Length: 352
Image (tube, rainbow, N blue to C red; front, side, top):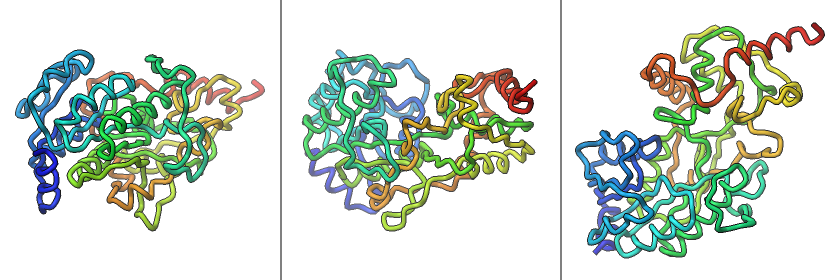
């Protein structure tokens, strides 16, 4: 019955699915549910009730942990499931096996971090990371990518030919709990001299969470399976768009905020010597050992409709959302103001 319904809704002009979302109350999951509601899909959320428990009172919520509580989904069927919160292959495998006869299609949100090494133009055929201990269940910088790769494998083994593994790049926009993109949006809006890692032409890739969610829903509606890199700008399947540059991103931040911020481009070596960490202290800037992380090939996804909104729109929406947060909300990424001021002073007066 599930397979029949999956075929029927994918052929209609206005698809309607019975959709199960694992997670769904924060960031990407939240955007996914909002768009699924707008499309008229019948939604069930399965989550622990710990994050934004009051969200979406009009949709069905089944509370539980994917470790031990999957039986709360017994006796039900859905056209598709979207797994936004799978990190360990044991648990993703358990979830996919349990749902194998209950859903027609399974979307697993993976990451471009699955790759064993990065290089410009990397596509889905690049080798993935292999863990020394595949049973490890601790997320670190060295295990995250390998765990995600094993999660993809576990889902595919449970539901062969019915899994969409989305290797997402940096996801940005409203509700982003990492603040990696928001740091620059807020910092530039504050004006003054802004410390930025050179060079200005540094490539940067990211995708608005709503753009990623819209594409995942479309793929689920059409029953598309396989592995896809998904980040932006997407371009088209035949005409890929080059990554943005750091200079373009900061320029959009300045335009969106009407700011007069001055960008001080600081040498990467200077920053490294002072133990300033790219990506965490200065988000969007990938370290040298990850050259290519921000130059991933997304033509495969673009050929199936992945579309990304203009950079300025993403910045404006992030700025507007950040303004709704409680006054004094500290960002989880980026330089602290005192540290930035200290670095700028030393950069200005290296022999003082």
